[in-house]
Length: 456
Image (cartoon, rainbow, N blue to C red):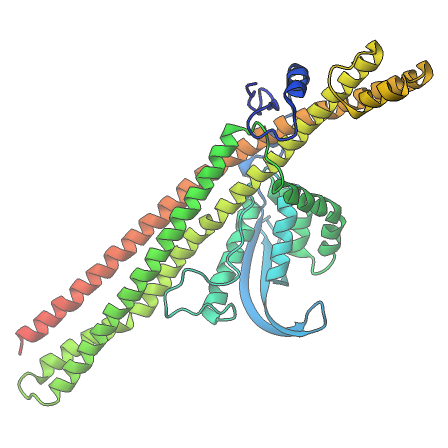
């Protein structure tokens, strides 16, 4: 049986492909046509993505958001053990015109990294079709040898502060996430917002349960678009990981080259002390070498900024896969609902006609111990009819939810692709400009050294 792609047009039809494990040949032949008919009768879903999806209505146009400061603190964790952690100062200021003679008030509160994680988990569960912006890395990866992988290292904390601010700005500029009440309370309420998240705990547990199920089954007829999207996200993650590893190796070598210039400077300075006529030229050349060698730390720190921009899209790849997984789970529920409904309709038909079309334990039992009484059969038939009506409503609802999900997710994915292309283009061009500038400085250093040597 072929699949009808889940999307704004139709739902996916479960079939008897190679991954159908528990279906016998007879069952597949009997149920196939009925399942196809059931799945194709759903109504088209409402376009929820059209609600609140205006870019001009985003929170960032009304509120200035920054993570302005990071502070090392010591406290007790959940098991009453002392721990050291970093808190980040989140500041917001309204961009609405203030009353005459007044300034817009500044709200400021401290948040831990774990609170940012809780916020993102909540957004991922509440908006399953959204490619939720990722958080910066919790521990440093893909670093060159001079950088510390310690998450309390001041340089790393500063880069993570910038990443957390970028996360909040991304969410505040998203046309749907920016309107979320819990996100608003995260920005403006020191306490109380966690309780609201905990009220959504049941939903989070359900999401976790479904994630666990994902490892135990495979959708019989996955949407090819989501399958391709998953492969694309895997390839993006692989390419960016490789690029970051190469960049770390290049940074190590570049650091060595610059430090060799420092050795040149030291040798020229020592040489100038024993040469009278050439001393000034050697001293000047050594000075140029020293300045050049000392500039490597700032250069590689700037490079790290561009590396962090690449890392953001490394983590975005996982956010794309999360959307694909949620679609698979939704599709699985849809297929199981259709299968269950078709099975109940078959049972109802068998009870009504008194014929058994497939082997079953109940059928064998009735042959061994006699048929059911008309009253028993009527009661079972009535119960089945009620279950069929309920199953049809549930299937219709799942059809609408599935189509709705695909509509919204593809609008979101198109929005993400535009953002990705724009951001990576800008980052790579800036990186190239920085490399050209760095090379020009190297040429200038040796040009200056050449002039110094010429004057000797």
